[in-house]
Length: 399
Ligand code: NAD
Ligand code: UDP
Image (cartoon, rainbow, N blue to C red; front, side):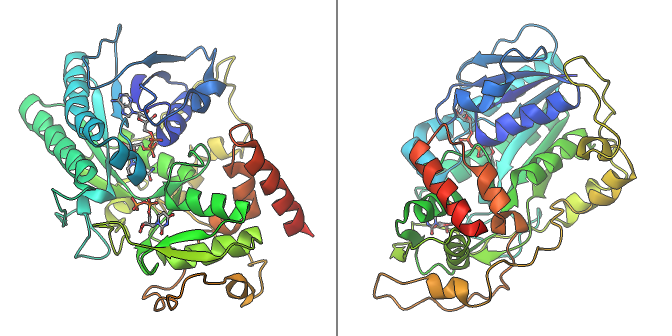
């Protein structure tokens, strides 16, 4: 199979390229680097089944040869990015979606749209199922992203209904992991970078707003399986473990052993107060019945993994039992920080009283609590100062 992935030089797009290549497919990546980086694809240079085209998808797209699938991931995704590029965000969600759908029609390709939990806006239903239509302010600053994605979903379904295009829509919830830009402005990156630099962690509002963070491997696996499924319509994919932003800040400080304080800043307009995916549909759809994952053939570049390897297990019974857990977090390892220690490290630098405690039970994904996560998280080449601080932090932690 030959697929086009737009936004290939971004955080999720680059992991998606890796996922398709790992199963023996041919990938054409496309990006204009507005928020992505060639660094994210550097490891694929010279790969015999990967080609890259630098192109703005809001302009007409020409691809030689057949295409069996198109995965439209191009779009600024971090709030500071889409607030910095409001027109480009609206264009990539509208014109970019139109162009890629037109290409899918011309090539007879299956189409997968990267949508977002932001289509639910500041939700009045919690957790959010796909049947909820959302609560979005179309004229607020976040509207450029939310409405672009809502339009993109509508356009995708219109192409399906009018032209019979085989479409999938994934509503992605907050995802984190390697290859995010340390300065991309999203909360996980901000907090870890601030903690490692000993700077105050910037909590917006009182920190009682909630999010549910998914590690990138799990998100990509879910998206990959959705692509191979036969379901037309939006599907939430994310981790339903929900916690407050203040809890996240405290945990990052504890984990890094940082001397950072917490500084409260104003809450940005229309910042969703609660967010947590209802993944009942994903669990049902992407379960053992889904016609996914053709076993790949060995190639000189990509030999088959040894029996029991993670990739191998995806094809066996293990994969099918693991699948209903779209976010298959294992039980959390013993917390290396004794109870109370983490809170004791946090000092509040503003006069604001600490916010009320969360309505939700704190549940930290083990990847967030493990030093291994932090080790793989940062790309030392991108930020040598940070990498140095990070290494010394890890040394201290292991004492
Ligand atoms: P990212 O900014 O790292 O990647 C987006 C990529 O799209 C970048 O490489 C950028 O240069 C490229 N791009 C933007 N406009 C383009 C254009 N006109 N032409 C060609 N390339 C263009 O963001 P990400 O986190 O990887 O997000 C990828 C997709 O997933 C986006 O569509 C986003 O809306 C969606 N999404 C992500 C998350 C998340 O938590 N990461 C959550 C919800 C939805
Ligand atoms: N946030 C914060 N401090 C930061 C960055 C973000 O408190 O330095 C908050 C933000 O207001 C939001 C949550 O963290 O409530 C998640 O923000 P992010 O930008 O990661 O993504 P969003 O879910 O808002 O798209």
